[in-house]
Length: 312
Picture 1: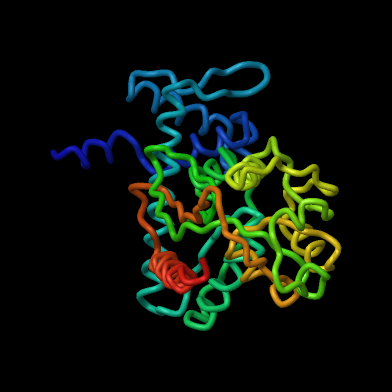
Picture 2: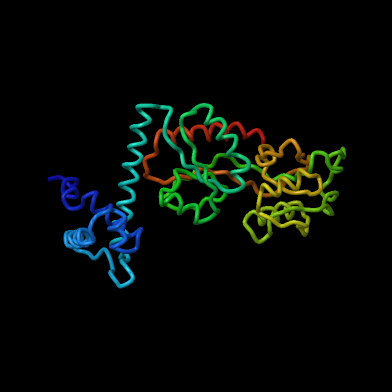
């Protein structure tokens, strides 16, 4: 008997499904109700599984059941197995109808209001039968957890976590640029130096935030102290809207200035761009089977990113 046969005899999909239900519900009774099977059946399954594996999977108490370290390991295996089966089902559907399937995309606010609309429009034209589920995710570890828990298929972000369980691919690097309203007095000047806009009303991210630190680095690279912004915000849509009004000055990534909904109302000042380059990256789980629809979306994203290289 080979190893896969032995594992198949030791652990069944039903066992893993029950363990996942207990972890989600927090108790055997709630898991039994969710799965519509009896509480004794749930208890016997876990007891048999613990006896077979020789480890304790759950700590039972008056407040419910909590996974042990062994249970956490087996839970991750169960999540991976059911996710792979789901991806397999999607692949079978795609083979029978290439214009089908679903892509669950996570992205940060600044990506959502710049790069994503261009990608989505192109992908939807090329694959009109594929459903896109676009979700706003918070930067940092939270967005990585969304990937780990299979709530999204892939992520487009500015600041991915460098961790062993992810594949991260840089789409492009770009500078930050000084932006004013297209109809403002500053936009009508033939020549504008950085010193000419320092007394303007600035809308900038807080300097103690990751984007704010990049903005501060731009000023320092130009040997100028960062100004005190009149409006502090990390909301890119608000920032772009205020700049487009002509009453504020700001700093944006090149792609945001070129692709935002207010792009026609913005003007990038012809100032030498000094300071750090920032990346846009696509991230997905390593060693995870991607559905054909997701593979097609990644291909489309790469093509759009290549078309943007000339912008920066």
